[in-house]
Length: 348
Ligand code: AMP
Image (cartoon, rainbow, N blue to C red; front, side):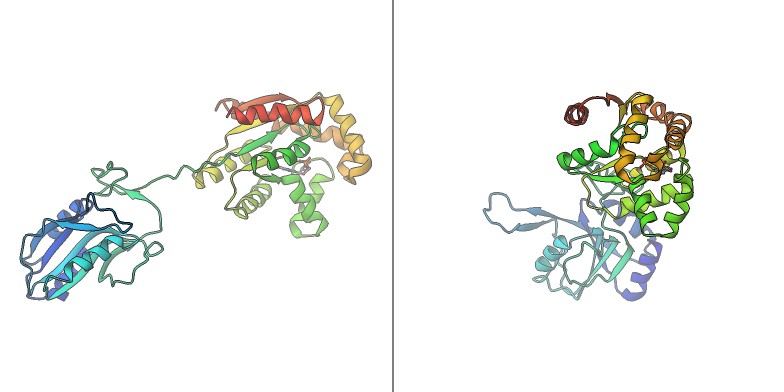
């Protein structure tokens, strides 16, 4: 603000400028600005209001409050924020008929990404990203102008993010394939991503393979980095089904942070509950056709189940504490289980 005031004062020189604040948003900016302005100046406010009762597709505006003759004066418009530039358009239209000496535009905030006009902005305080801000005179639905600081509004995205949970062989992958179609979600299976990397002999694949072959978990940081990258590939998603992730507390924390950075959250952990002996039988059966080394050997299968109980099952508590845990019987026909899972999702 100080910088803006000095910059303008240097340009204006000996003249006495008229600062015009555009209400309502600019009242705090103007108040602070003129206190920093080092030379004599005049201050006034105007407001733009839409005409009432005019049937037109174009938003016709009327200027309220300009009572002063500005002929021959140096006029500096003080705006709190310029985003699309629509208000500016009106200001220029209206000032065309005033015979001012010069008309300059100063704004505290400017959103270059949103700006659609080509009027010159003579003085800009700071450029900000195209996010909705509130406070320091700026409102959201009329509220928030009194906040002394500026805040960014959190956009609550209506994403549905599910953690599909359960021991190896519970049927997470099978069910995820139905649910992703039904709810238009992106399915991320960390196991599948690792296997894809192994097939393509990437460095990540080679690293993961040594753990997977023994039925152990891949180290957290490797898995978390990979998952973050997968989520970032799908910026337009309606939501995600996380299958096989998180498997540790550190992964659950990382997932919460990731969702938070997207102004979103995990809505539910839905767990498929299946007895261990059924799991072992299912995995051995799958191993006959899946080509997965970790499905072919009973001791590796049992080790995966042990890893599940020692490291992963505690996540039930993590999500239960947030009232987000939903257990579903994972024994029955594929269709029946899909129906049970859908009932949980529809109730969210
Ligand atoms: P899955 O396909 O989910 O049964 O995973 C197969 C193997 O991939 C696991 O036994 C682990 O070695 C590895 N893996 C998959 N997801 C994770 C994860 N979230 N954390 C650590 N390792 C994982």
